[in-house]
Amino acid sequence: MVRTNSTMLPLGTKLPKFDLAYVTSKTLVGDIKPEDLARKTNNNISKCSVLVMVLCAHCPFVKHIEKTLTLLDNDYRNKLQILAVASNSLLTHPQDSPHKLVMQLRANGWSFPYLLDLDQSFAKELRAACTPDFFLFGSDDHLLKYRGQLDGSRPGNDVPSTGEDLRASLDAVLNGKEVSILQKPSIGCNIKWHPGNEPSWF
Image 1 (cartoon, rainbow, N blue to C red):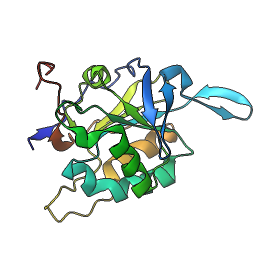
Image 2: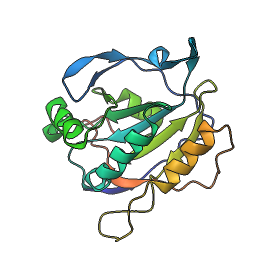
Image 3: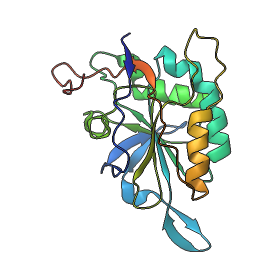
Image 4: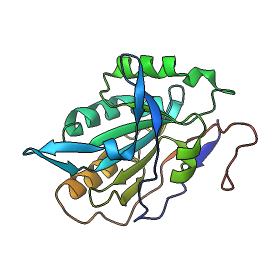
């Protein structure tokens, strides 16, 4: 385990294009892409805000916040699109296989889809570095409003996990307010890149 900080993708970056398979708490389902990220409001289709969470099944930093993510999912699932992304190499870490992700989804009661970034291209576009890593894109053309930590809780630091940093940003975006630019990087296990596929910032 290498303790790694977020790279802090520049604010205002547009949600990268993707077309990825995903799993849910039931099974491997299909594929999803940005144009699918719309919700029906008063019989009109409008873009919604999107929260992308880079997670995995085995990381102790992710396991530490699983209950907090369940509360987050319960509170925000009907207000924006939540997506988890699994980018760890299955060549080196089969413990993050789709089957293990389904088990994780079921154990925590998560309703959001888990995207399978098998070639790691989406993680590279996000400049994701660790698990967990969080990216909040607003409904205005899906531009990045927040990236960084869920809260200040880490395994072993005795700080309760409340999700306060991410929740404050979610509430600001959903209420049409400015998100504070004072954003702290997430810290977690480094993404497990395919051998020879490590990005320049690794």
